[in-house]
Image 1: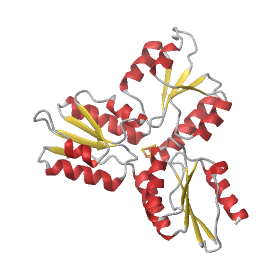
Image 2: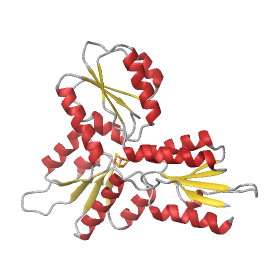
Image 3: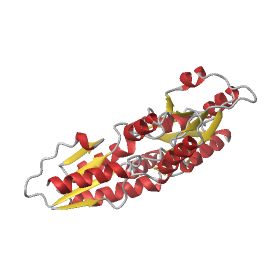
Image 4: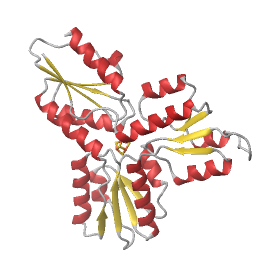
Length: 289
Ligand code: F3S
């Protein structure tokens, strides 16, 4: 039996950078908070918590932190890879807290696009999950009307309330084909649309290589956080190609039964999954089957 890891799997550039930033700051011996979990992976967050990093769950928790007076050493608040609304930066400044911005540069680019486009009077459409922190962050950089949608049906039902131009962007982890399908719906409606494909190439690469592997594999294992949207998408894609697809957070979740006929076990992992976890799963399958 062969065990094969997808060509692209695990930590992406932005997540690696955010996690490294937290470790660098820890070395300076400061009190460290992250605004929201630094990445969508409970294992990573737990490890950081053990080292004393505290998570500010929301705006209210941030507001509760004591203000830092001039001359005092401030606690550092690290902004997660997914980014935050502009308002959070203002609150940090008002409170005199040190802000260390680990927003992924690809997400920052979306903030700049929507901010500029809405300043020009355009209606922003964000294709993505409205409950996802990245999307909430992007909404928080819009300076005018904004619509968030994730299903083609919502695009069909969309009616522009005026004759503004529409600027469409996407959540970085959105499914590539679905995004194009939704864009086509807008174009068919005859609106004046400008489209910026802001899906991150790390996502595309992971999705493509997961699909390629899943078409060949008898069993697929997808590793990643429960709340990680890109991991869930990988699971969806793999399930389409391989009926025996497992979604696990850690090795403890794996209840694998492999009949003798299984020839190839494929493994992939979301962009917030550390290598250590991937290796553990690989080794487990190798040793036990
Ligand atoms: Fe950034 Fe892309 Fe990762 S947007 S956080 S490099 S998935």
